[in-house]
Amino acid sequence: MVQLTDLQKKLLNDFQRNFPLTPQPYAEIATQLGVTEADVLQALQELNARQFISRIGAIIPPNQIGVSTLAAMAVPENELERVATQINQFNEVNHNYERENTLNLWFVIIANDTTHLENIIQSIEVKTGYDVLRFPLEKEFFIDLSFHLDLTNA
Amino acid sequence: MLDALNLKLLAELAEGLPICSRPYAIIGERLNINETEVIERLKQLQNTGLIKRFGVIVKHASIGYKANAMCVWQIPEAQIDKIAQQLVQFSFVTLCYQRPALPEWQYNLYCMIHGKDKKTVLNQLTLLNETCQLQLFNQQVLFSRRCFKQRGAVYSQN
Image (tube, rainbow over all chains, first blue to last red; front, side):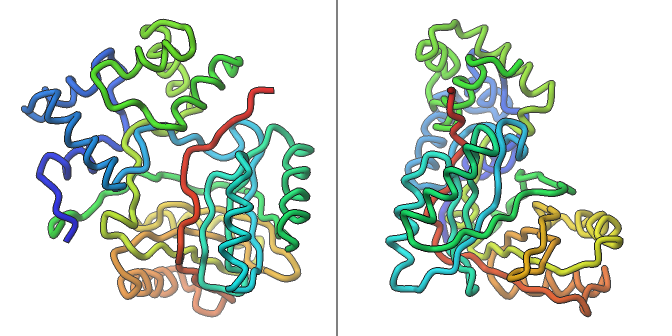
């Protein structure tokens, strides 16, 4: 299917959290896995180039820094590409998905404060010509984007 | 703790940790601080819980998890907490949030399921509905089609 090496599978599954905070993190991972640092770097570069990983980075829960909201729009199919592209031009937007529904465009906006957030939403409405529905987080029950991947057939 | 430098550090990380031998040194160079300070600041951000998780962020869709479903229910306010606590017991539920109901969208409980295909995810959703007795509540499942953007948050520094 996607054809991953055993090393790549381990890198995908076992280092989603607690990534080494040491001067040579990839060398430390290599030691844990019994390979060389160069092997780890090459495997990760390939995973990155093939877009199997988004990045090595930090997950920050919503509203820890600034304010954010989930937002949604109902956009006719033939307008969707244009509208999505316009929304993506805002640096404050970090996720933007088409979903199967009349409300078919769902995106997340992160801003400095509520005024900034409202300004961005209004700019998006003006620029795209469609209304934005706001679904800010009221209560978080669970967020854990680390996730065991079943890669037995990969 | 959230001084301007930490914001810049998180902005650098939003682009991804460089894949090279001394990645924290590279980030330090961009911010005019040394490698040790980058590492210490990241440890501190992690210890205080601001960074919830630091590591490899997988693109589920390209790795064979093609079906990404946002499941929403309309639940009476008084029952939300209890139901949500049940939902998050399932390992395939990766996010669970309460959001405001609007006149044009009266759902207030959201969870995400990532699965290999739609059939698997729909089976998992059935299991949720049966186990937590949610069949009678209004609900929808919204599978993703195109991903137009997925990246780390960029925090502005003004």
